[in-house]
Image (tube, rainbow, N blue to C red; front, top):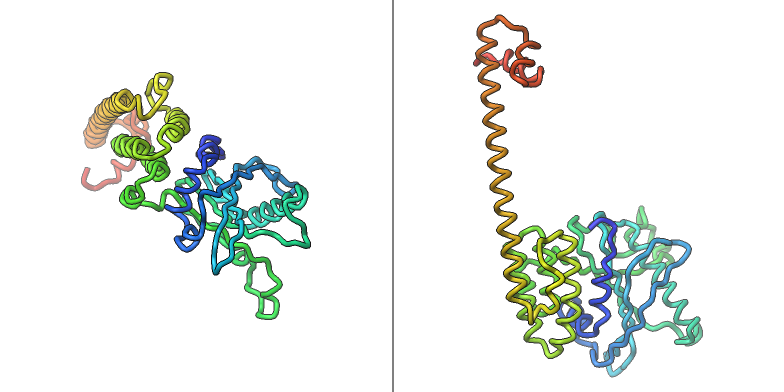
Length: 319
């Protein structure tokens, strides 16, 4: 995706239904089981600091959790990471973002340094194609590992990684939510047949959801952006609802897929003709070499083959 920060994804996670689906479907069960999703509250904002000036996309939600009879509000810090290459600075960035967010809570009088800071659950959502190789705890970046008496003085902050591409179609289908359908569409982007199946499953999951109208609206906008980035030959202006316009969308996707198949067949024929011309040129060069009348340079000029290839044919004992 290049260095593209998908504002469409940021819009998706502006809806509590999709935040809940992310937590229930992709976060550790011991974390999501504590959450009272009816208390989800959006606290989002970009906390850009002098250390990291680049624009990034984040969402911050709070949710009440209960454990051992204690009820407390936890902040879910969701960082949307859409880079073509893995940023190995991310543990440092995350530490900085969390510190900056805590500072924001103090400045906005949500809490004070004396009262203490609320727990944070840092989540990184990654949809790049490259394998994720960044450390998931800043402590793991400290090399060599310090001796025991120094370890307690080192920074520790671990984030939870949701790596879309690591989930198979079967795993995403088992979750059967609109968000898992979105992930399936992302993963199928380069396979038009798989894309059609993923879109069908996405539409079905939206239709079955209690908040069908809200999710249909936001996911339709996201899918149109996604298809535009894929340069899909689809009449996007005519698609206003995945649920209402699903037949037209399916027809558009099939038409696009057929055009791609025809293009592939045409390119295959062109490659075949080119290979045939190359083979004829090589046969001509071999025959001329056998005659021994022309120089290698003259044969190369006559056949259109590179001089190095003519010399390779000359040196091949089978010719």
